[in-house]
Each structure stands twice: as structure tokens, then as C-alpha cells.
Image 1: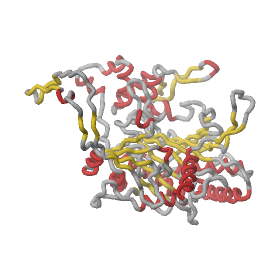
Image 2: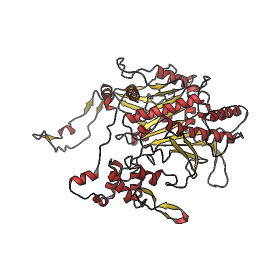
Image 3: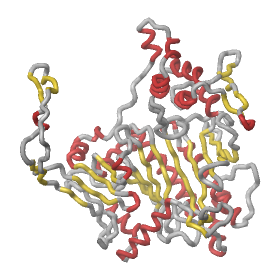
Image 4: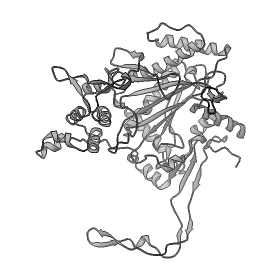
Length: 540
């Protein structure tokens, strides 16, 4: 097979497979175990004879299955069941999640004439379920006080936690049930006064230093935390909404909030690059204003033309949403409060073969954007064509897979001159959206945030916010967002576009053996999901 495994083609039309299954089945079963299943409408007995047919079987017309190679081969392949997709196309309401139920154990116990203090006697799994599902602040306050030692002022308002010195001198809160603490502290219905002392106040979650902040005096306030000992080496940062700007839901997230979260990412990246290039740095302990930040970016671009440095890559991500199963499995992010994380990845890392004191060479340091660059090079070698030029043309020329012309055919959800928000032809999450940077003010392809001017960065910020608003409007409560950037400097792949993927986690799609093989199962056509997202944004 000589062609690269992608749905993008130099013909500038998406290509995909279509299975039309028809096959024989040799029956190897020896015995029948016919049993009563129950009754039909309480009258006629219902048995399972149909499960034990005689002789060989013939499957003549099974459901058609579309097999769509992802544009990027490293992201696997998407499979769409035509029957499911047709049902979703006929009723867009299938592509949405109902809001959570109102849950109050206090009300339930009160109606039964039982003391509310019974909550404290519930088994741990039930406490955990209540902590994640209750919408009654009375329940949650009681659970919070069961989970840890909370101090209060004379008015009974939480003022702090009780702490204890652990081994090696570490100071930690006094927890009675840490899983319960995490679950209740991340419930949006817990009163903010409890959230602040439990998790939001600087220092409540440990000693991570605050090394940046953003605030405009209009209620938006973001802190930048340094994560010293991180699984991402060399400087891992988190931009968290501050304790005086509580944001537990996308509906509460404003354009100013997004601007602040992203400004801290741009600021940290540009300052680190300026330092690496030996440039003069701005005043310490002061936020760099957007106008000055743009000056620094332009100076970096100018310096990169004449100075040879290692080619780092940015890393940016956002886990929105939190949940705990009653069994103790954490289902998504470490906390609900809106936050974003970012770092920089070096070009190489020293290689070792067993002796940690003596390197034996070096390895390329992993960055997910590098896989995009590899696809571009492979595509060019196989086809002689430019991958992103063909990909964008495929999006522009998109046709429905069902061949119908009386339904929506566009994959585009929103766009402006600098960015394109769209539904990928092969979604790796049932509701995946992607945001692609286009060109800057000079018509140059934007491959990373260093190549994005002020207007382009504003477009990216808006596109990220709109993606989250559209998904939240459909009921998504857990979304992972990641960035695929081009390497910074001369070693970056020419023509590579900066790309973001937004990956919701849906209740009936936990991820199992199919997803572990990079086989992603979908129940709608991507064009119909794009139409649903456009409807959501029309309401924003």
C-alpha cells in the first residue's frame, strides 16, 4: 500500500472507506438453552429461542459503516454507523446531553422525617456520590465539614483550614477523607466561602509560588503558579482563576477571563524565549502589558533570524471538568476551577543506557506538534503536495458522506481572517472540535504563538472560548483541550499551522479497547455536528 493513511488528498476532497457488510456464519453451537425471559406486556410468555438458531446463518444487509482515516495518521481512524448517523441527522436533539438533576439529600430526609445528620452515617461510596451529584449547599456544607477540619470566624463563616506538620516538615491540611474533600470542593454548588478556604485561596493546595497575575479591575483575575516538581521538566506553569474570580462553569467564563488566561501563557513563553536569546527583559514583578508583549514578540522573531538556538516547542493544555465515581475512580481533571497549563519543551534530551551519571547520546524531546510535522513531510514525499493547503481545501470543498444535498454540508463552526473553528472529518471524540490558526497580518502561516501577532492571538483566544461555549451549550461537562504547535525557530516545519483540539468526554463513551487501538466510534455525521455547534453559537 503506497498511499499515506489519511483522508486528505491532493485532489482536495476527503476520501474514506465504506463497509457494506454481507457474510455467511457457520454455526458451531451444539446445544440449545432455551429459557424464559419474562412476559410481553405482562401477558404472553417471552423466551429466548431466537438466540439459538438452527443451521448456518447469512447476514445479508448489516449496517453500513464508514471508515474515515484521521487527517493525521497518528490519531487513528473513526468509524461511523450509518443507522446511528441517520437518526442523528433526522433529530439534532440526539446530539446533546440533558442537564443534571436537582439532588437534595437534606430535602429527602426531611420529607421522610429523618434527621439530616444521618448523612454523616452514610457509607463512603454514598458520601462520594452525594458530593459529586448534590445540588443542595446544605448537603455539601455537611460533607465538607466531614472531609476535613474547617475553622470559622465569629459569624460562622469559614476562615481557614486546620493544618498539621507531617514528616519531613511538610504542612498539610487535616483530612478525614481526602477523596470526599476533593469531590465536594469541586462541586459548583458548594458555597464559595468553603471553596476558597478548601482549594482556591493561594497556598491552600500547597506551596506553589505565584509568579504572574492578570486583572483588569472588572472582576476578572488570574494567578500564574509555578509547578516546581512537575512531570513536565524545565518549567511547568498553571494559570488559575483567582479566589476572587470563581469560575466553575463555562457559562461563567468571560472573554476577559480567557484573555487573562491566555495572556499569561503568551507572556511566560515570550519572556523565556527573550531570556534564552539574551534580550533585555522587562521590569521584574510587573505584568507585561499587551502592547509591550507584542514588541517583545517582534524582537524575538528578529533575533531568531540571526541567532541559532535550540528549537523548543510550546505545550499548552486545559482539562475542564471534574468528576469522581463512587468507587473512587477520578474521571477527569484534578480540579473544577477553570485553569490552563503550559510549558516549553526542549529540542532534545540527554540519552542514558542504564548509568544515570553518564549520558550516551541524545534523543528528540517529545512534543505532539512534531507528529504533525512528520505527517507533513511524509505526505509531501508520497504526493508531492502540501498537506495543510490540501487539508484546508478539503474542508472548503467538503461533501456529506451520505450523499445528500438537502442537509448541511459545511464543517465550519466559526471563522475569521486568522482562525478557523471546525469539526474534523474524523472525530476522535464524538464531539471533537478543532481550531486552526490561518495567517497573520502579513499573510504568513501561523505555526505557533510566537508567529501570531496581536490580532491573531485575539482570534485564537476567541476561537477557544467559542469552542468551549458551543460544547458546554450541548451539555459537555468534561473537555480536554490540547495544542499542536510548530517548533520555534529555523527547525520548525515550513507551512505547519498551529492547531488546537477540543475533546469532550461523554457519559456513554468512557474509552475502552477500541479507543486503545485508536479506533473511534461515532454516531453522527460530522456535518450535522457542525450544524448543531453553529446553532449553539447563535445563542451565545
